[in-house]
Image 1 (cartoon, rainbow, N blue to C red):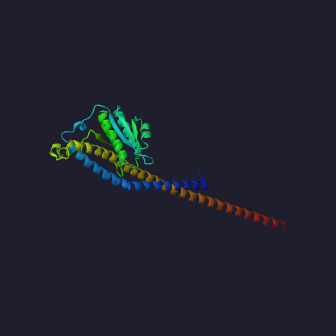
Image 2 (tube, rainbow, N blue to C red):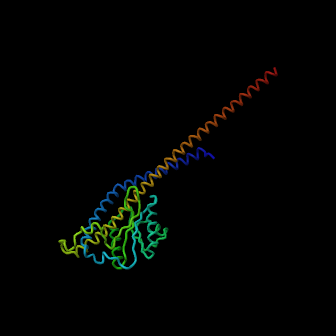
Image 3 (cartoon, rainbow, N blue to C red):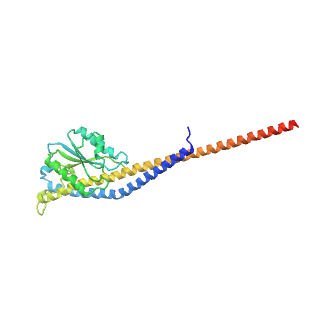
Length: 295
């Protein structure tokens, strides 16, 4: 059944308002991504440089930092603060749920305003949630998470501590897993790193390690935060662009339907006027005929 013009106008106005919102959110996400992408690239390079320095200090004598413990596995999952970004948030929760099935005794920690809700909905046991803004990563929040990760690995004798986040990519938003503890290095670069004994250090390797370790750990966590934030903005851009395109299609369809409804209304009105005129003409002719017959 065709809708009335008033209903079509109301629906059209509603879709146009929705389009304004989705387009505004697209522009906001694009503005956030502009700086977020640069921060993600810089943090990745900075973290890799510190990792190489740390591995050079540990090369040949890693100690407990390069050995898996015998306790539980720990996963720190980085979520976002808001929705309307497609399957970005749910992909992390689904990835964590798969890990929970593989390692039933694992401890899962979350970061982000939506972390607890999404993890619980996915059936992931929540050991704790860190405070802080996922959309606006702060080094102080990264420092807090990194300190807790070091404590868990050292005091709780965990097997390993992994970061679960979404690396920034403009098109694909796939969760990834990065080992934080024990400290590892790539096989192809391990032989290229100098031994700790071959380096000239001031004051000594132990003092440098005590200084670099928390800096590196914080940098790794912060890199995961900015990568996730940039990926969330990219996913929201894609989702809002798709929503805006769908709104444009709906607006075009509604405008065409309203145009056809107006044409139908005008046609009906013309038909009614023509029918009334024809009836009036027949009545006039009938009256003239009757008047002529009486004479």
